[in-house]
Every structure is written in C-alpha cells, then in structure tokens.
View (tube, rainbow, N blue to C red):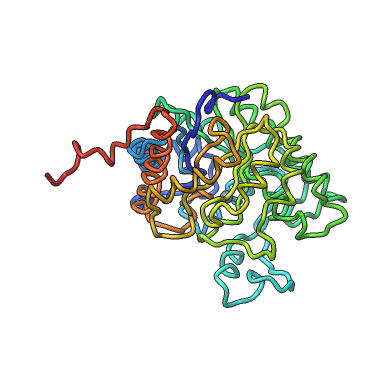
Length: 390
Ligand SMILES: [Zn+2]
C-alpha cells in the first residue's frame, strides 16, 4: 500500500547507495551490525556517516531519503551488495574461489574492468539449508529514520540474485534454494515492516535481465515472478513495496546485453506484488517511457531515473525537467516518482557529484512542479540566503 508516496505527485528520491565518506574507515568485516555498534570507533563513524548522508539528502530537498547503504563495508565496486547477505545467512560456508565461466561476455575476459569486479565477489558454497542470519535490516532502518522526519527507504538484494552468487552443493534443484532464500528474506522484510519502515525496496535482477536474453528452461521468468512474490508476500498489507530494476552499477558499469529495453519484461514486472516499479530513464534518455507508461498496470506507481549514476557530468535542472515532461506524456504525475537510475555509491563517483546530482534532481522537479501548480521543495543548497560568498 502507498505510505511514503501516498498522495504525492512527482515525489523525489534516489535509489539507495551513496558514496562513503573517506573518513569512514571502520568495517563490519563479517560481524553483525549490532555487534559492531559495540565498538566505539565503528559506532561513532557509522552514525556520523549516516548523519552526513541524511543531511546531504535533506539539503538537496529530496522527499524520500535513504540510509546510503551505510551498513556496507568499504568494499570493491559494490561487493557488499552481495556479501552483506552472503556473509550472514545460515547454510553458507567459506568463500569459494571465484571462477569466471568461459562464456564470451565482457566480464569473463581478463583486461576488462568487469573481470576484476567479478574476481572480488568470491561466492560461498551452500552446504546446508539456508536459514536466517543477522541481517538486521530493521536496526539499520531505525538508525537512519531516527535522524529525520522524512520517510527513509531501505531494502536489499533479492533471493534470485543472491542465489546466482553462490555455489550450490546442497539443494538438488536451484529453484528450491531460491524459494528458501525468498522465505528467509521475507521474514527479514516483515520484521522491517513491523518496525515501521514506510517503504521497502527490493532489487529485481532476474526478470528484466533475462527475458529475451537468457533462455533457461528451469529458471524461467515465470519462476522468478513466483520467487519474488514469495519474497514480498504479505508486505504490501503493511507498507509500501518497491521493486528496483536497473542495468548495473558495480564500479558504475552497465551490463552488456544486446537488448537493454524493458519492453519484454514489463508483462512479468506487472505480476510482481509491489506498489512501485523503478526503471532507468536518464542514461537511455527515456527511450522506454512510452512502453513503460502504456504497459505498467495502473495500480502501480513508476519511479524513473532522471539522473545518471554512471556519469560524472551533473545534469542541469532543465535537462531533468525535460525528461520529466517526456515521462508525463505517458505517465500521470500522481503515479510518477523521480529518482536516480541506480545508486551513486558503488565506487562510481565522489560525494560532491552525488550531492549536486541530487540537487539537480530536485531543482528539475521544482521546475515542473511550478508548471503544474504543485508545491516546490526547499533546496537549501540552492538558497542564496545561505551562500558563503556575498
Ligand atoms: Zn540498480
């Protein structure tokens, strides 16, 4: 159900991750978050980093904030997006030496940045039934929500993607592993919803990244829909549920597929039990807005990326506004949410770039809000009253 974006037209947010402050040098290093918070230096750095992320988003004027994925370690190219879960869920053993398949994709050949990214992922073995571990999403959300009155969005990786980063030695059928992982994550998300999280976002990797690209008779799009819906089962009755889709973010890289259109995936994405679907829109200049607007069911809102997480050039507010107007040809402003294509924090850009991309996002939204007679957000960074030079 709609909670965080209820009654809001052109609500603004970012995907999730934000660049980590350089002075945040402490790491969980496999520990539960609650245990690490008992270490004085970790606790101080974590909460100061979180506060800086919340302040930057507030100064930019975003409506829905994130915790910047601050629980993740100072890792290589977004490794913690996977490792945070893999290191904590029961049934997994020591990291397995990473192996690249022989398939002729760019991440399978030395000499490509994505080869080095994959080299660091070290999938663990699954040697027993998977069980809940100390993911502690609710504790991470409370830490961030205690710093602001604005809704804080938090979420994680889906079971379909987690499974792909393991070497299974226990389950006879990969589908059983994915369904067990879905049940484990579902319990975690219910704890988060019961804690009061006003929006939960889960990344969907397997549907839009496989439909029309990977022809697997076992792990079909229909199966991934079933698994995702098991992962979010019952959540919509408690809170607002988002499904995030993108074409990649490790080290700010895009996955390489012949077809980077969402068109074939939309019938499947429509079957997901979520309130909001997110789509990239900035890098592809809104090329899919028409198929998204016409194809996504009316009971869902649509979040589009209007700033790019893969480039350092900060978009002008006028460019953002033009993209929003383009989206509004096919998507009603009441159903439209403005975001980034994906997170800024996977070793892609500096805090400075991320801040000004968020500022441009909101200033661009304000240009369109003015045209529509909607209230504009207060962008403290852009307020001349607070400029340091007279
Ligand atoms: Zn993403």
